[in-house]
Amino acid sequence: MLKTGKLIFLFLAIFTTSLFSQIINEIEIIVNNEPITSYDIDTLVLETGETRNKIIDLLVRKSLEQQDADRLRITVSKDELDAYIEKIALAQKMTKDVFMGYVLQRLNMSKLDFYKKIEEQVKQEKLYGTILSSKLERPTENQIKSFYDKNKEMFSVSSSFEVIEYSSFSESFLRKKMMSPIMEVPTVFEEEKTIFAKDLTAEMLKILEASPVQNFTKIIPSQSSYLVYFIKSKGDKKPAPLESVKMVIVQKLMLVQQNRVLQEYFTQLQEKANIVYLK
Image (tube, rainbow, N blue to C red; front, side, top):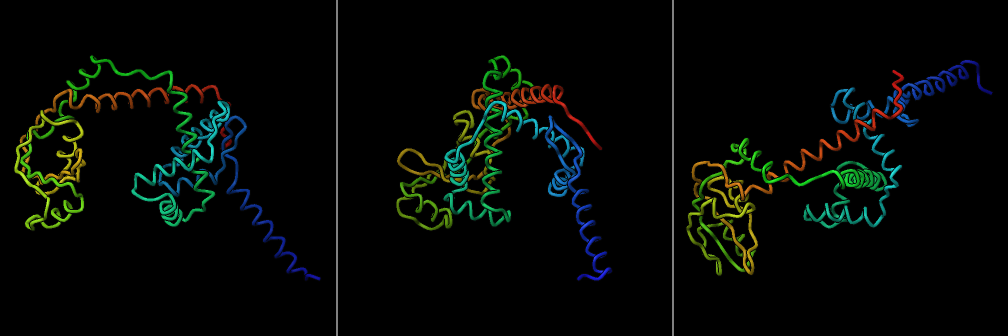
C-alpha cells in the first residue's frame, strides 16, 4: 500500500503532466471545425525561425488547402508517390533507395513520415494544378515586349565570349582534359573561338554566362560527341536579344500570374471560411 506522501507525489506528477499536455496542445484557432494547436504553431516557429503571426497565417492557409483538396477529392496513389520520389532522386543523380536513405538519415525521419510529407506536397501540386488549369493565359507578344523593354538590365549578358572549345566522343576523356588542360589526351580536340551572344541559343547563352572567367563550363552533350568550353574572357554586357530571352520572360510572367491567381483564390476561400481565433 502506498504511503500518503507517495500518493500525493504521484497525484501531482500525473496532474502536472496532464496540465502541461493541455497547455502545449491548447487549441488556438479553429478553421471550419479543424483545430490548430499551440504545439503546431510553436513547433514551426522553432523549426523555421519565422514570427508567430507568419506561422499562424501559413497554418491557416495549409488547413484551407487540405480541406479544399478533400472537397475536390484529390488523392495521391502509392505509385504516384514512388514516381515523384524517383524523379527527385534522378535529379540528384541518385537511385531512389540511396536518396531515401540519405534524406531519412539527414532529417532523422521515419519512412512513413517522409511519405506523408511527400504526399502533402504532391497533393498540393495537384490542387494548384486544378485551380490554375482554367485560369492561366499565355502572355501576349505586347506583354512580353513591354516587360523586356522595362527590364533590359535584367537580361544584360556578355556580348561575346573568348573560349577554347574542347570536344570528344568520350566524356571521360574530356574530364581528364579538364583536370589537366596541358596534358595531351587522345581523341580530345581543341579550338580557340570567339562566340557572339546573338548566335547562341538561350540555353547555351545561359551556360556560358553562368561560367566564371578562367573556368570550364559543364560538359555539354552535342549529337554524337561532348563539348566543354574554357572561358578565357567575356565581352561588354549588353541586353540579350528579345528572342533569346522570350521563354524566360514568359516563365516569369506566368509565375506572377500563377501567384496572383492562387492568392486571390485562397483569399476568397479564407473570407468564406469559418475561422475562430481563441487566443
